[in-house]
Length: 493
Picture (cartoon, rainbow, N blue to C red):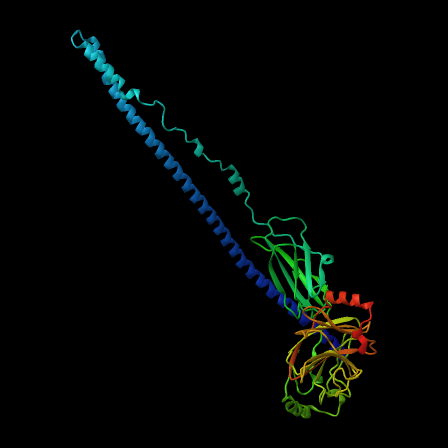
């Protein structure tokens, strides 16, 4: 009976999930219908607007060209009418002289004939008819105003809706991931001169493969890309992968997104283990500040939360490499006395890792390095064989030293605003760099017998940590150059 009930429960659960899935799909279809109606109205309005605009242009051009024809006709009409009027007057005057000449010839009177003939001759010589140009001042041909719209008509008749751009394809083999920078390269199936720009989207994820329906991080959008590649700089790789997709756009419409491509973004990430922090250290996310009154508040909280079980004490570390510290640190409590220390929650037991820390240069004391799990709660960084560090001291006089096993070496280099820490666990190398210039400050060469943990100390000051960083290529190059040489910097190991 119980087995049947359990089977029915599973069937009921499966049916409920299917009903929810169908219900969501129905809602999606309804939304699609609404979107279709709205988008259809939008494109119809856009089309009407475009044709109205085109008609306005044609009307404006027609008016301008008609005005030019009218002006030319008026100018030529004036010239021809003026010439016609002058010719008419000259003809009238010439006819009067002709009639006078005929009358004189037909007259039988001899007296005065000579003078009359002379007067007629003078009048003819001065007559307007002999001063006129008998060539028309303006042409009656207006054929140069004829237009041929055949080409434009063909263009108009060839008007079509803009085609949807083809779907790009991201070339994963040509994409590059280096120095917290990603270059994404894509191609089109064939050239398209109507492409105006591309839109690239990227999303952080801890899952390899195609995007899931529910992801922890949103898509980030980069618009207005004119070339078929994009370089993203200044990224923090705090997830295992970044997924990319791209689509092409013309003046009117965007195409479909490409198939997503997921690129691995290996980098060292960790959090600060506030449970390990000295009671005078105020830990907020990746920032730490000295708080002289912190101990009183911490003691009260500590008494309220203390139990006899060691599983309730602060934690160190656990899973894969780099290893995440578990929530419990059996047999240990937070750092105390003058060990103003806080550890990370992730151990390093393989590979090359890098992180940076920015600190207040006015701190009375500050240290950064790595420590073994065995570091005692009273131990100060660099004063036992369980820790290695660079130590800044502003008490009485300023000094910058490299410390390990209670031995110190003064460093002859400027004090930077931030320090980059490089660990090559397999080679036993711990190096410190000026985070801005990548200038090597000091290197320890040792052999790590057990996993190490990023460690920090501050007294009367503050610092903040940046993780999710790949080992910079300039640091890798520096390590390769130094790998074949022995450095006095390593003498403290």
